[in-house]
Length: 172
Image 1: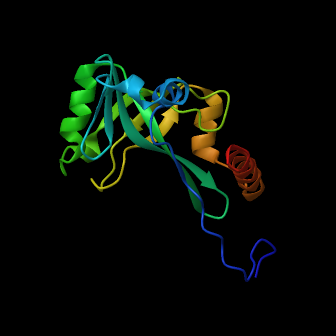
Image 2: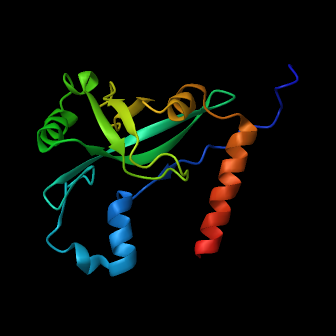
């Protein structure tokens, strides 16, 4: 057994999924859900949102490798640049031939518990299984691209999780 191995099983990785893009969350938080009446269309599967007929969002995964072969995933919303791209992603979503070929650019619509993420430009793609969300695979901003590629050590993941749990405790 190597010094890095233990007899203890690995704890399951906690994933975090955002219910809506941050811009919509802020409206609900400050003005209540009634402020969205007539401004929001949500797809039946809750994977697509059109807001004010001029902003378009799709769910995706932002995977962060964690040492030891684990993967943490942020369930994020990505803002697409146009209605045409929005409809293209929706049309491709359930197509077993086209979905794995799907590639698109977008902006991150959630803060991912960091100060340097919201609005950053990323590249995402479909995956082989049409039941899975598209995955962000690279970002223009180097710190995000490095996070996607190199991820966290177990200690970095534990620090992130401790901070997130403290934030949840404070909100309750």
